[in-house]
Image (tube, protein in one colour):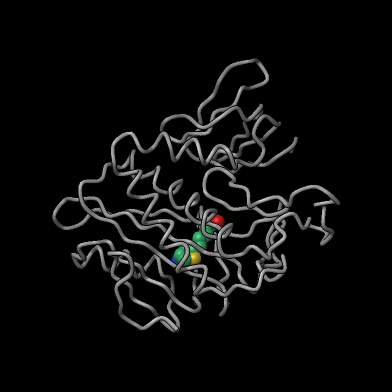
Length: 270
Ligand code: BTN
């Protein structure tokens, strides 16, 4: 088991048995002047937070982890850290869950087929991980201004390891359901290794283009029809790429390229 306070790849680590939300605690640490490079992990969360004010279910056995970064971050480049996290989580799952069949479809049937190599996890813009079209993990980026005027960014990562929610308006899945016998701690350790490596690449100036390229090579729905819900409005078109700032780029029905900074993507015509 993880000890309550430890060091992990040059990051400090605080491990809880239970917590309200690892993101909320990481933000509190930032408010209290924490120097950052801190992981907060918990076996379960009582009030896990999802994107856009939604709740995130975090029963024991699933992974709930938040990373606090502070320092000379700008909001625009901080937003791209969610992509570093998504890519790192994909790297980690592909590395430690070789027994998982990431192509088990949402109806439970495998669509790998004889002779076809199994699918790997897919990244769904902005920061979800999908397996067989169903949501396996979510990432929530939050930020706050510290007393010294610096920006603090919290990257919260939730993985459905043993359980997945049934009461959500989208298909969801878990590692257990995919037949992977790896636990939350194993996933976390692999995530922390992959994060360390990808963050180093991101931080060295031109590194974002490498992150972006690898992200795009695993992107769900690229080249296909999407509907993006942005507050009240819906924008439809073909998902072309993500730009240098990781914004979602679609070609709308009038052939015009549109860039979207935040929204909910639905595949197909909704
Ligand atoms: C989403 O897909 O809506 C994002 C889900 C993010 C969940 C994680 S679990 C660890 C961290 N703490 C939270 O309260 N939320 C994030």
